[in-house]
Image 1 (spheres, one colour):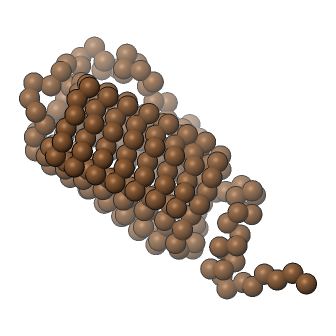
Image 2 (cartoon, rainbow, N blue to C red):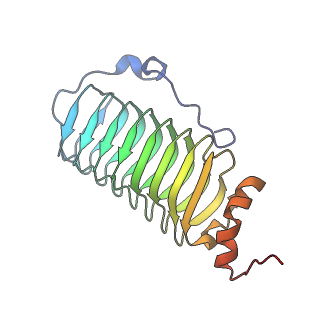
Length: 222
């Protein structure tokens, strides 16, 4: 990690395990082990992979709708052009994962742990990250809207070139969370949760009215 940025592979061929990848031999199922598998150009509707483990696996042009991956584990996983719609990813464990050019909407990720994860050029909306733990995570040129970070813990998280709209903080713990470089910063909820955030002077000017209101400061010009 360098300044909050992860050097994620940009193509399938860049993966250190690319030559070992093979197509899946069976449908996704719960409590299964998936290692060195390449899921490509597939649609999974209401599939259940609760408690499954994905290691050195790639997903390309795959769509998941209304399924459940609760308590699943994603270690050394690469996702490109994936779509996650109304899917349960609660209490999942993500480590060394790269997600690029993907779409996530109405996804439940509460209580999950994300370590060394990068999201690049993704559109993310109505994402529930309540109670999640994020460490060494980067949102690079992403569009985030209606994301709930209530009671979440964020450490060394960055948002270069990203847009944040209606991102909710409530009893959120921030440690070295760098919002500088975000093109838009619209934060809702408990502004005391901004303790531990890094922002630039322009962002401070945008947040100042809400911060003043939270502190009970009345700003009046003669």
